[in-house]
Each structure stands twice: as structure tokens, then as C-alpha cells.
Length: 206
Image 1 (cartoon, rainbow, N blue to C red):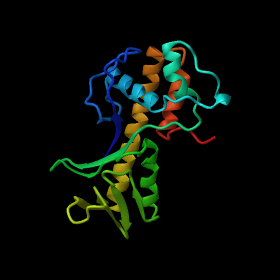
Image 2 (cartoon, rainbow, N blue to C red):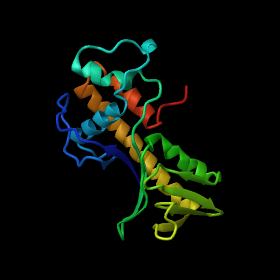
Image 3 (cartoon, rainbow, N blue to C red):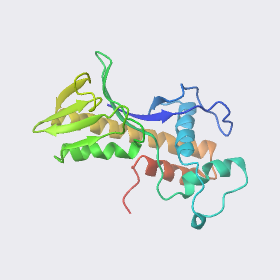
Image 4 (tube, rainbow, N blue to C red):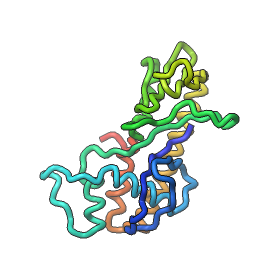
């Protein structure tokens, strides 16, 4: 189980160094990313929120950096496309793939499944699903293709261990992002780090 961020093209991006990634692929978030990969992740999260906020959030700055970061730093609800992906490393079979419109914040839905609330879906195309059945959690890559979709069943304890590990990967990435922001965006470091934490639903409760 890995937290993955959906990546779009960044061919003309020049505000800070980024790495090369296939458009509409995924970047695994953890504490082992290079500075350029962290820059790619921050770029993508900011791009997900590159919208004009409401008037009460202030006018958009005129400089390119301020303009690009404005939505991320002022929108009350920030979004990062992606989620937790589950793959059998032995067979390279994917059992959960974050679908369209799924955000990183939905990682907490895994906790709801573990706590016995039934099932959760993680976007569409595919419509991946995790469902608790007693002491077992069934993972289905595409709930709309029940006859052909890969399915695996793991114990609740196994899933809990996987979720704990993936959550730690997010925390480790956030630590990298904080250090990266201090180096590359010193005047916005604290605000960018806080916004990234909100997008990952890692911000402390008020």
C-alpha cells in the first residue's frame, strides 16, 4: 500500500526545479524522494488548486510565483488528486487504484472500513472498493466489473498494518516538503507546508 499523487504534464514549468514524470501517471509519496521529486509533488498539489478564490480570500498577486500559489494558500478546502494504491508486489497486480476525482484526503476512509463501517469507494474508472466482511477486508480493483476485476482478501490486521505504513509515508513526505519549502520557497515556506498538510489531511485538528 502506497500513497500516490496523480501527476499531470509540467513541460513549461519553471518556478522551481521539478523531475520528469509521465503525464497522468502517479508519484509515490514517501520520505525517500529527491528534491526535484518533492518539487514535482508540491507543483502538482498547487496546480490542483490553481483556481481563483472568492473575493474574501484576497486579490491574486501579480508575480508568477504568487499567482501560481494563490489558490493553494488561500482556498479553504485544498485538494490533491490521488490516494492509497494497493499492489501485490509478487505478481504486480493492482487491487486498489485511486480513480478520477479521488483525493489524497480519502486515505482516512480506510480507517472507517477498519472500524467496521462497511465499504468505501476510491473514485471511478476504475471504481476501486474496500469492504470489511467480519475479520476480512476485500479489495476490488473495479466494483463495476465483478466478473473480471482482480480481488484480494486480507485480514483486518494486515490492512491496518498497511494503512499505518502508508500514513507514515505521508508524514515522511510532509517532513521532506517542509525542508524543501524552506530552501526553495523561503518567503512562503510555512504557508506552503501547512497547505500541503491540509491537502493530505495531515493538518492537526483545530
